[in-house]
Amino acid sequence: MMRALYTASTGMHAQQLNVDTLAHNMSNVNTTAYKKQRVEFQDLLYQTIRRPAAGFDVNEPVGLDVGLGVKPAATHTLFTQGNFQATDNPLDIAINGNAFFQVEVPGYDEPLYTRDGALKIDAEGQLVTSAGHYLLGVDFIEEEAYDITIESDGTVSYMIPDDDQPIEAGQIELAKFINPSGLDKLGENLYQETINSGEAILWDPLDDSTVSLQSGYLEASNVQIVEEMVNMITAQRAYEINSKVIQSSDEMLQTASNLRR
Image (tube, rainbow, N blue to C red):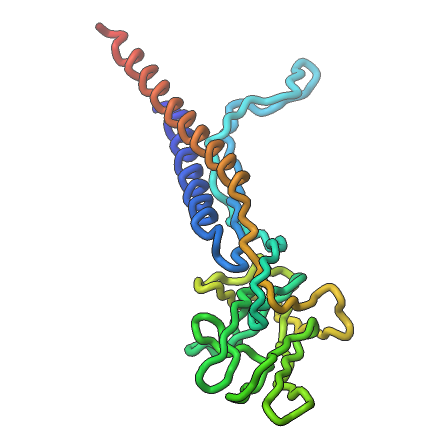
C-alpha cells in the first residue's frame, strides 16, 4: 500500500481536531474570561530509505527518507488578557493581570480557580460566583448593606444605615501560577491546580503591582472571531487537500491494478 494513504489520513485526523478546537473557541466567544485554545502539531517518524555516506569513494552528504505524517502534540491555552466590558455593576470584577480568583467548590479539598468575576450575593450574604461557589477572602455582607465597593487591591467594604463609616468585609484572595497553561480545565470557567501548573502563589497587592482589580467591569473572552474564521478556512482547506491526496493515491493504485488487463 502507498504510504501517502496513511500519511494523508493522519493529516485529516489532525485537522479534524483542529476544527473541533476552533469550534470550541468560537462557541465561547461570549463566555466571560474564556481563554482560547490552540492545537500544536508535530511531524511523525521518518522512514529512512538511504542514509548519508562519506568515504574515499563515496560522497553522499544527503540521505533519502520520507515522513509518515503529523500528530497533534498539545492543546495550548492562551491566557492573554481579554477586553474589559463596562457593566456599572459594583459586583462585577475584572482581573487586570495574570491571576485568578479562589473559590470553594463542594467535592474538592483545595480551592479551585477562575477569572470569571460576575459575582453575586447569596441569601447568607456571601460573595459567590454565578454557580454559587464561595469566593475566598470575604466575610458575609449584612442584609442592610448598600454602596458596596471593591477596591483595586480586593478590599470589599459597604455602608449600612445609621452608620457614617464604611464596614470592611474582607479582601478578595487572588492566586498566580508560574505556568497557568498547565492548569486542569474543569468547565464552568473553573481551573484546578496540577503539577504542571506549579503551586498557587498568593497575590500580595503591596508587593505585586502587575495585578489589580477593576470593579464595574467584566473580562471578555480573548477569542478574535476574524482570526478564528481565518484559521477555520485554513484547517478546512488542509483537510480537503489531504482528502485529495487519498483520492490521488487510490487512483494510482487503481492504475497499477489494471496493468494486467
